[in-house]
Length: 208
Image 1: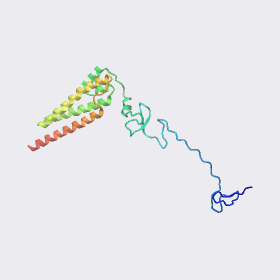
Image 2 (image 1 turned 45 degrees about the horizontal axis):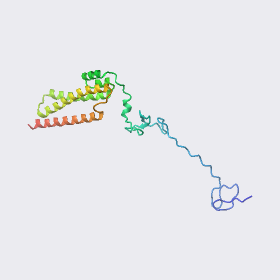
Image 3 (image 1 turned 90 degrees about the horizontal axis):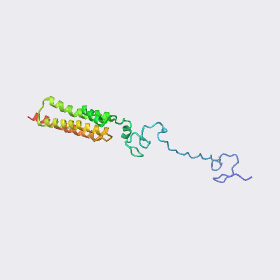
Image 4 (image 1 turned 180 degrees about the horizontal axis):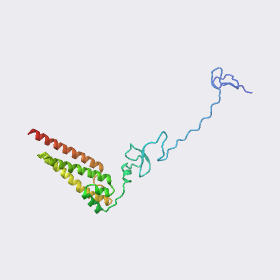
């Protein structure tokens, strides 16, 4: 029988020894290594470990994207496309959508299946026309005030006629003349110009 020796220092050891008496190296057999785990990529839409993560499905490729992203990380489709696919398609003819929009801006958009765009146009029309009406009824008259009223009335008329034409276009399968972002910035610019002109009129009246 061969003598058992420590693999570290070469000292003689007994068969039942748990460690070397000279260098105290462990003589127990090393455990078999565990098989390496294979990392699998979760399927699209499957919940992740550690809790569900809020996400939105891409309407084009079906990939799940975090809510912080405005566009799909795979194909680049915008988040707005997910909202548009839930909107009903046009249910009226272009002529009827045009006539409905003449009753009030935005109604034709709603009839054509674009309710959110209709609300935006209707709100902007009420803002411009209503503010002009309030200024006229206040009885204040000056050149800057007249400029504000003229600007608001022209804007209200543009929104009124433009919404009718746009409703006709949407019901015919076309796209809006003005995007929601452009309309938002136009509203902000209109309010800033109106406030500036009103401030000028107040300064003019007080300086007299």
